Length: 359
Image (cartoon, rainbow, N blue to C red; front, side):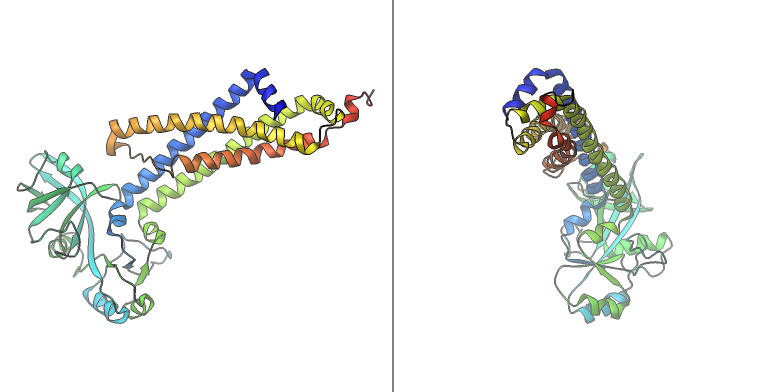
């Protein structure tokens, strides 16, 4: 590593430029990762909070895609599914509409369940539980006040921390109230959108008996249209940025090694082994990557905290190990892979060239 450190000290400007490029790429990748996770959370956080083992939905449509938006479970299907699967399933109605209080209006997602089955469900019909964002947007509505949803007046019983579904804050009502609301928007004999299952059972038997399909884990989130479309696009962009970073770093080190080929030949002529020179060159790349990625990571964290503090839910940004450390490690690994393609010149450098054999 002696040569690597000497070269870094000699060509400060060149390596500072590469370090700045790496830091900017890290900032871009980190911010995009934070927005990806944040946007994903605004589509599925309410479903995640249910902490269910399985969701029972209607079978895929003609395009073969499961969709919460197209799902509708009848009371008969629910009974058949529970009987065949051998476990209880909680009916959950999901809908979207506009709530208002006075002249303030807010688009919301409504979750309807039976009282006592889920944490935020109100105890009685005619009651509703608001998320913080919804309450603020509706003139700071609080417990005991009333709001209007789909032409019906509800009493607010509680305001809870935000949960999101398809980028709308979730409000909670009883299943009976949700069924009444679903009828007003044209659903015929609505019972529930999905069934929520918290225990292990014979899911396949239940699906066969009720003509439904059970999903769990990541497949559940992919059945939510806003999540699947956004995350798929953003992950593709992230992947392209990572590939670009590897190409940029690889191109830089290719030029650098081509310029140093005579020096490498001299070192070989003096007795340096190819292995030692390869380790030296790769170590130099690792130093630059660690410094550049570290600076980019610090900037990303600082700006991310600023965005969270000032923008709130308007810019859904998430800081976690998956949006900071994970992208940083991926960039370091891919950067080293890119740099490794430039090391062929080190292995092929001819010591005889340094001794004048080409003259």
